[in-house]
Image (tube, helix red, strand yellow):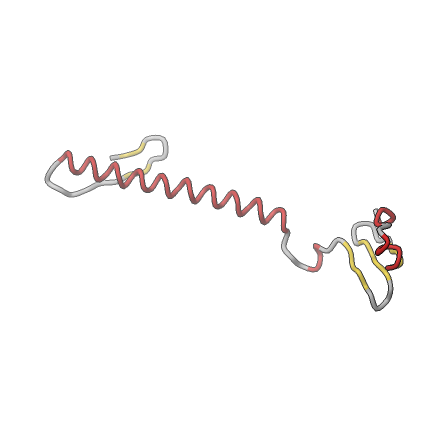
Length: 94
């Protein structure tokens, strides 16, 4: 038995044609459900990966250096004092 839209095939080797049809239909249904779950998981994972990035050092947006008393934005290279950053004056980094 073949599912025409996807080309998924299944067969059974019982003596009864009716039982073969029922078993093949069940196998095809299970495979299609598995394929749809796999596709959904892949889509979700790719969306998540795109949002998270790689987690490497190059993905940083800003560095907060308490020892040096400054905050640096890596998107445009601007710096500001940490006291001003803690007061909420983040707009100056943009």
